[in-house]
Amino acid sequence: MAHHWGRILAGTALSLSVLAAATACDADTGRPAAAPTTPGHAPPPLAEVKVDLGLPEGYAPVSVEFADAWHGYALFVRCGTLCDARLFHTADGGRTWRPREHPRPEAKNHQLYSGGGHVVVLLAEPHSWYVSRDAGASWQPRPYDARGRTPVEYHSANGTYYLDCPESGGRCAVRDWTAGTGWRRDVPAELAAARSLTNGRDGRIWLSGVDGGRIVTAVGSAGGGFTRLPVPDQPGRAVWNARVVTSADGRDIWLVAGQEQADAAAAPARLAPARLAPARLAPARLAPVGLVASARKGTGLPLLWRFEAGAWVPYPIRGIEEKANWPYSVAPAGGGLLVLAGPELTGYLDGGAYSPAPGAPRLDWVGQLPDGTLFGRDNRPGVTYLSPGTGPARTWSTVEVSA
Image (cartoon, rainbow, N blue to C red; front, side, top):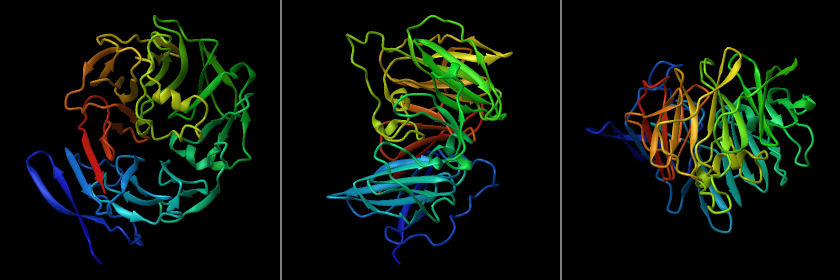
């Protein structure tokens, strides 16, 4: 069996050649390589990791997704009449990648989504969805629906509960992905505008949305009621979407609202490339209403509130000049901070005040993984940035996976 060799670069001075632990043709029949440090802790940071998978000519990365600081997946395709897919898995933060058998490698369109724990979801359009709960060691098919229905496991990355809203309008329902399709709780009529659900770290559920230009939020539980929370006004443009985000330790709870374009009639929106959308979002025709737009629509800086003493407190962003109609993204960094990524900057928001993040790469998009690791992208295919930790005491690693 011919091995394909990758290269890992640790820091800026040390260069090592290592086995990429991947072959282009053989599926991995064993378990992923064990992580090199204590389980349950983030792998030690490396300034740069580059791995060449040794695939035949013509393959290119479609998606590289991480479930936490350890585990990730990479999907490569080569397209002719149909697209042939190759799937890889890492269990050590991107240092080594092993092939996983793709359940349907030939299809017109391939997509990859990492879920919670060891859940991973594949789309082989127009044939079927495929779901694995053991990091790709085995697969179960799920029906494909051109109208955009996704498997329940697709929602697992965001926690136990998710919001299911009918395409034709009407009231949304709270669902539990672990309980199958039969379990549902209707959203109260007074919260019909809610289009976003956030699983709190303490078991609470947060609902948010926009109704006639006004932000609607509530907190409660799936088995009980919801308490509506008023949102104080702050200077800014009209809002068109709203969502709640929480830090990994649950201490920081933020409300993030997207503003309308500064001059929608005169300036076209600048869209982030489709591959830069958050990992949790399905392709445009498959995503819940409004989610892809919130990730890709360039509407400038968001409006922010923090949950303090049972109420939302406004935190206007200051110390940065907004580039109107460009996409910005924010994610909880822990320690009372948000990380902000936007045109030509990556930094922290502390009480709304912006300051550059020392050593951080320039990101086009940033998000938070379930274990608190920050996960970022720029415009280079196959390149991912990871930063485990909390607060500003972080080291960023670059993981680049190529064919």
